[in-house]
Image 1 (cartoon, helix red, strand yellow):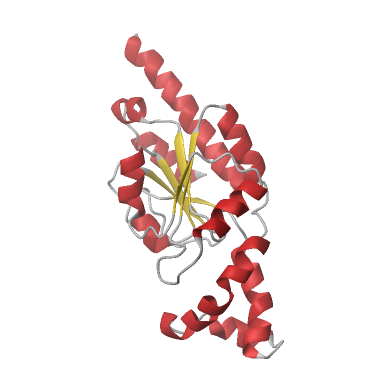
Image 2 (cartoon, rainbow, N blue to C red; image 1 turned 60 degrees about the vertical axis):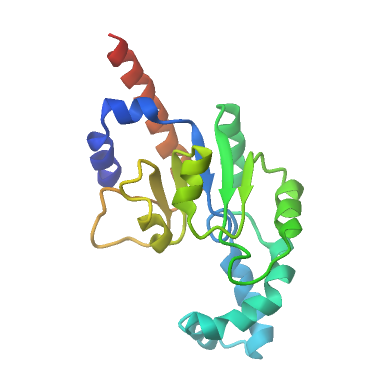
Length: 212
């Protein structure tokens, strides 16, 4: 896309040389399709099948949503579906010697048994090297573990990565009117893979030309 090209054009050889093959990703609604299951449980919680009432729930302030998530999150976690192609892409990245890290806010506002997340990743045979939960400062976590890329569905979270040297990938199907040259928007896991492969290719070319 034009946004991707604009970002590639701004990357210096020095930045490319410093890029590590370390990809970090959020869990809920980035790696998993969590919101699909929310709708199922909201029917029980709200005692309604009305899709408009369920949709309105997401417009409520967090203080009014929190009781629902406190009641149902631990029931939902084992049943979340993976995002399409997420598993396959991670397996291919691992074969290309990427370090893979899952970094999630999960458990920060609402107590959640960590074992549920560990068991879920193990059940789906996810080749993850690091798991960091209850993490509100994801940029700092990425710097601490040496991640070069972070994919997250929260734009508020992604904005924290601007100017950090870590490439933020906003996982969203929405098209924004104003393009942000510091943020890459990806709508699926194949687009994540495509972006990382282009970065890897540019990095290799950069090393060649720097040596020359």
